[in-house]
Image (cartoon, rainbow, N blue to C red; front, side, top):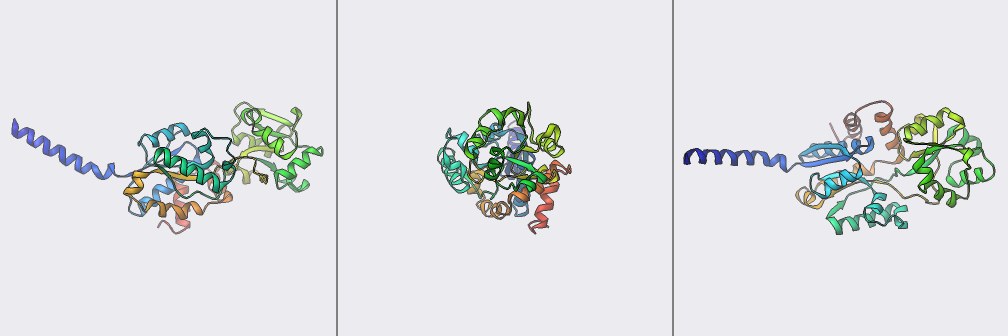
Length: 303
């Protein structure tokens, strides 16, 4: 019996030793959205290409689920959005979130101090709520910015906005109206109970019930295909939601090259690039990984 126990112990030790490389792999995760998953796949593929073991745990849940998994050490890295730090740290009214650089610096400092979570390089783009107008309407009335839109509506312009109940009632629309000095009356609002941006984009593009303006997210894939034009938030009313990979400090200590590997990837994204990549998933039906591979190859980062 003692000999058998020794053999079993030896076998166990061998099994643990064999498992250690997998345990050391970087667990790359994401939220449920196609953009979050696509960016997660790009990071995972880049790490593998650079000899860093990485495993795929993308699309595991909404923001609270992924955030808690990171804090609990169940995952190692995922792409967050800078403005969400205002919610994480009960500081949503801080004007810093309306500026990419200030918001990034504040979020990075707070998250590291509280959780030893490191913010890597952010993308110079924002997935914030925005208004997008049909291209023909924008051209006819020279609408490029929210200031242009505000003047047009205040002068009696025929804007008809389709949006979600949350957008209409939770303060976002009212904030835009105050900042840009306009008011949309009930006859100019079509409010959807669910209000997914895919539905608002499609309705504005088709002119459903007279809609010519849609609530969108800045990097939505359907915007260009629907021939809508985003109105620039030129007075910075809304928080900036720039995609930013965040990771546990212990993982970066184990693989310090992760920061430099991720940096050029994130810097390569602007709003239009993310819109185009999202369209391939959201409109064309390609998989997150297929789009990720194609983009990385196009940049010469993957063979």
